[in-house]
Amino acid sequence: MGMDINNLPLIREECEILHMTDKQLKEIMSRLHNDLVKGLSRDTHPTAIVKCWLTYIQDLPNGKERGKFLALDLGGTNFRVLIINLGENHFDMQSKIYAIPSHIMTGTGVALFDHIAECLANFMKEHNVYEERLALGFTFSFPLKQMGLTKGILQRWTKGFSCSGAIGEDVVQGLKDAIARRGDVQIDICAILNDTTGTLMSCAWKNHNCKIGLIVGTGSNACYVEKTENCELFEGEPTKPAMLINTEWGAFGDDGALDFVRTEFDREVDSNSINPGKQIQEKMISGMYMGELVRLALVKFTTMGLLFGGRGSDLLFQRNSFYTKYVSEIESDKPGDYTSCMDVLEELGLSHATESDMAAVRHVCECVSRRAAHLVSAGIATLLNKMNEPKVTVGIDGSVYRFHPHFHTLMCEKIAQLVRPGITFDLMLSEDGSGRGAALVAAVACRETLGFA
Ligand code: GLC
Image 1: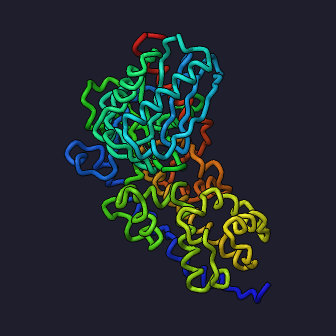
Image 2: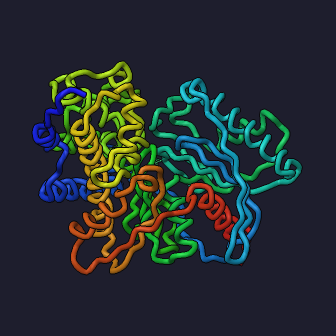
Image 3: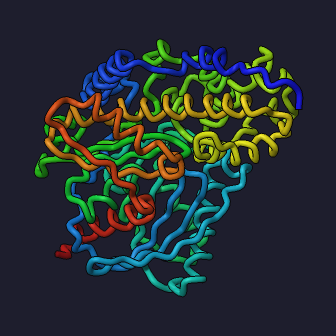
């Protein structure tokens, strides 16, 4: 091993741009608050950046939902089909993951829905319900302009999807048409929902304080319970006091609102993406981009001669080669221990890294993930302050929150600092919100329409 020159102080200095002060976070909160109000208000909604879509979900589960439901979950890394039995105080659930090949992710909308319908039919065969007529909840985690519980017009693709001919179309109709083209199975699509709303619903089943749903996974987004009187886009009779609002806060920053804290790494991630200029906040937070942000910083420091003796590797210089799961792995090493870090660097062809290189790599990971946790915290604190209720539980799902060793703690600390005095909160991991939530929304919808108690 050559001389181990310690460049950590210089790298720490370079990483300062990834640090957001409380003053900056409070500025972000005030901008997000304004954007949320714009999204909700009839006059400003058309040009709003944070759309605050209505979900038409007005009833939280009361724990009495019963029955057998199918659910689809599209919009994370995996596509899943589930069958769920809701019973008294318990539910059982079987599911299967299907790949969405990349030619389908970027093909046509029709091909995507045909693929989904085919997986659904195969799943029904395997679970011996092929002949049954079942209710289905569809978790479709992209921005939808909902016109009701079973009608949602796709606004934009996010997270690497780009199927043609789907934007501006009703996604429920797309799935119905695909099922009809097959002609073999009978399905009642009872609800279409976002993964954030599924997460909220599945937590609310057990915990009645749960009024915010958050995803920090492939993408990032939140939903919350808003007073119906503030939902200016709602046209029906305001018979129920509240409605879930899907904020689609991933788009926050698309008008430059976050430029004052963005870095060269953020701008590069954005310009290399399939949706440049879009989902700016999401690109600073979520799992689809976190590893790449780290990689870009490592590349810069290597090129400056501060890392790896100035000698990178082919993989290090290759886009998206630094997986977001590496960030969680590296930060899971105990202080002073670099076991996982070494494994990752070896995988990347960087086995010539010294101990101070490894300390620097870990520092870069910490800065990027901490910044993500702080941005999410500013968002949650904004919602908590807006709701202004004494005690709210936040239901959370997503790979980053679930697998990162410090994300939960970072969030608890930062939200506590940012939230108005007197407001208390807790953060609850949702066990499979997208799947279970879809069944619950379908169940609540059936309870409504069929008059089940
Ligand atoms: C993206 C989607 C949003 C979803 C989030 C988390 O931001 O647009 O609908 O909730 O990812 O999956």
